[in-house]
Length: 77
Image 1 (tube, rainbow, N blue to C red):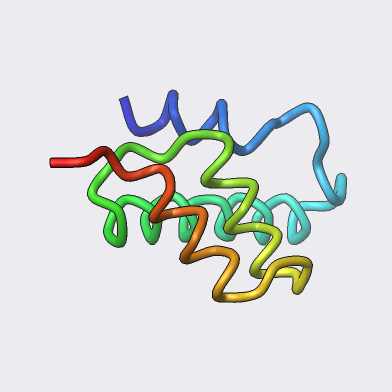
Image 2: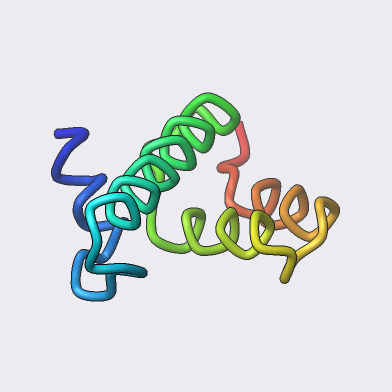
């Protein structure tokens, strides 16, 4: 189940690099982000969460924006 989710989120159609090290870095980054999303939200990561976390990692979103996005996705209890 995790590998299917990981493969869908990683988007294997658009690799950053075609060299071994580049693919390894992209796969490692994707796995770390998926695990961090799971640990911080307690939910299975989806594309929107993965994309927002990626925006934060590369500097296109602030921490406040990321936290607000995660809070808006949480289901009320």
